Structure formats: structure tokens, C-alpha cells
Length: 330
Image (cartoon, rainbow, N blue to C red; front, side):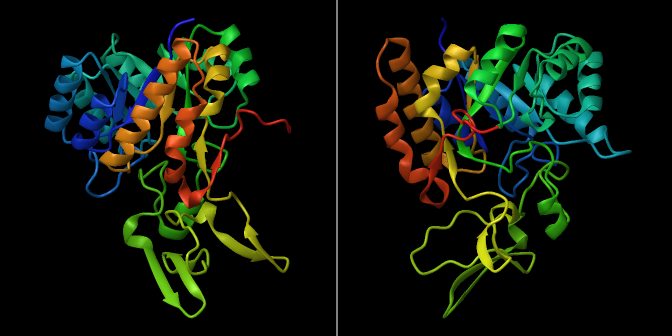
């Protein structure tokens, strides 16, 4: 059984360097436009920076995967085509794509380009994976974060397409690529604009009742003094319904699946992915180093659980979850 590939985020050139120096096998990044799902101000790469990043990575035997993973706008897909072109010119090892039209362009224009299917496409069945593989030559599928390890194992036994799974970082509402909540409040969503809860729409109000985060003026939570708070997104807001205040969509917790790393490898997962292209160098370096240590320990028959405790203070809202990987409900 081979080692699992460690795929780490690179929101900008300094994070790319940090991830590689900490032990990443691959880094994934995006161009500075709406073609990638982390289109935040101050992040991402120009075409020239991408080429420089690829050269830096390749000198160290690390791969660069370019996320072109939003859905192209009707009548405006030229931007997405240009991003595919830029990734190829820069020498990227693969592109991560969600949109069928963008996949079709990439396959037609660059038959030898390695294609990965983004988690945004939400392919979690054999038929879906087979469709993308047969229609576009997709070589790897990033699985949506709704599957248990046994379910992934069933898929892996039935397909030769590589499977990649998220293991750390933020969790979206459990329907990848279907976000309408951010768009409802702000007019922008990660699926189309590449940004969830855009910073210009976020504000915080402090008064005698505590801290109130707002998104486009909409109050989405109220926090007491000293209470942990993550970045305010509508899906993780706390609202009053039927006389009770609670998280209606999803608790603000972070994924940490290091304890199921062995199960994921046994299930046939080819690569594990860390979320966090909007995070800084310290985050990237710490998470990459911890998972590098855990994978190396696993490869030598040692326990990788101690490495999980190195990251507990990075959890959003101070809480962690293994997500769906060990769930017993259906």
C-alpha cells in the first residue's frame, strides 16, 4: 500500500513556499480572478507569479495543481478559458475543474493536460465518476465531504480514477457546489464569484449584549464576551426558530480527520487535502508539517494520532469534528 499524497493550500506565493518547505507533496492554488473559489482580495496568483511558483515547486519535486473550480458565467466563459491557458503556460501539473464546459475546453485544447474534478462538482457516486472520466478523461476526483470511509472504499474498489479527500480545515454545508446562502445575502457566492461572505460585506457590532457579526447588515449570531467566533458565514449563523436559538444549518466546527487517516488509506484514498487557501503562512506551515509527520508515521507502522493534537488550537470556533468519515447515521 503506497503512501498518501499530501495536498496543501497556497493562497499566495508565501504560503506556497511555506507548504513546500513543511513537506507538502503537492500544493493547490488559484489565479487572481473569479475562476477560483477563494477569490479574496490580497490572495491568489498572477500568471507570472504562478509560473514562478511552479518553477520553485518543481525544483523541489513538488506538484502544483491550479484550481479553476467555479462555474463559468453564461456568455462569459472566456475568463475561464484564459485561466486554463495560463495554467498550461505556467507548467502546472494539473487543473482542478468543476464546470463541464471548462472541462470540455481543457480536454479539447490541451489533450495531455491532467484534469482533476473539483469537490464543487459533488461527484460521490460511481456513475458520476465514470461520466467525468469517460467524457473528459478526468484522472482524479476530489470527493465531497459527505462520505464515510466505508463508502469511499466501495467507490475505490469500482474505479481506477484517483480519489482525493479533505482531512482538515473549514467545512461547508454538506452539499458541495450548491451554496445559495452567501449569494442570497450579498449577491456573491463561492460557486460563481469565488468568494463566500466577501470581506466588504462583513461587519461586527459590539454592545452591552455582546458581539454581533453581520453579513450585508444581516445579524447572523450573537456572542458573549470571550466566546470563540469563526469567520462569519450565513450557513454557520445562529438564529432563533420556534423559540429556540441554535445553529440551523451547521455548527461552526473545523474538520480534523487525522485520526481516520489510516482508514482513508485503507479505503483507497490516493491523496488527502488540507483546506485553507485564505489562511496565512503559519497555518499552512503547521498543518502541512503535522500531516507530513502523520503520514510518515503511518508509513512506518506507527501511531499518527499524536500529531492531531498539534492542531487543536487552529479549529474554527474552538471545536473539531471528524465530519462524515465515521458517521453511523443514514
